[in-house]
Image (cartoon, rainbow, N blue to C red):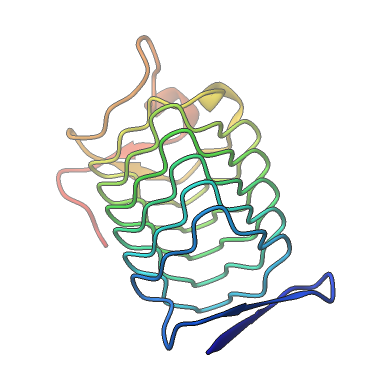
Length: 164
């Protein structure tokens, strides 16, 4: 049994020994405290992670389709190979996060803080990408952008290979 604590005073008890690969679909994890947690390969489709504390957490190869991550703090978190299609990420803090090979197609990133993030190989055909903060982010030739989007003009460095 595993317990996830939330800043709201609530908690979620799960019948699992690890969050790696766990089925966490449609859970209410509003303001969850998951700093440094390993959720690699977890199934989080439709999960509510509003205002969650996700600093340094690992979501590599996780399924976060249609998840709600607005105003979360995911500084230095890793989403390598994660599926974030349709996720709500508005005003989230993703400083230095790793999105290597992640799919963010149709994710709403309006006002998201993506400074210093690794976007190499990611599908960045997002909603409201024009209002996300991208200064210092890195991308490569495999990164997919919306039609007419100029990553260099937004402060993104296009490199030959990912650094992370």
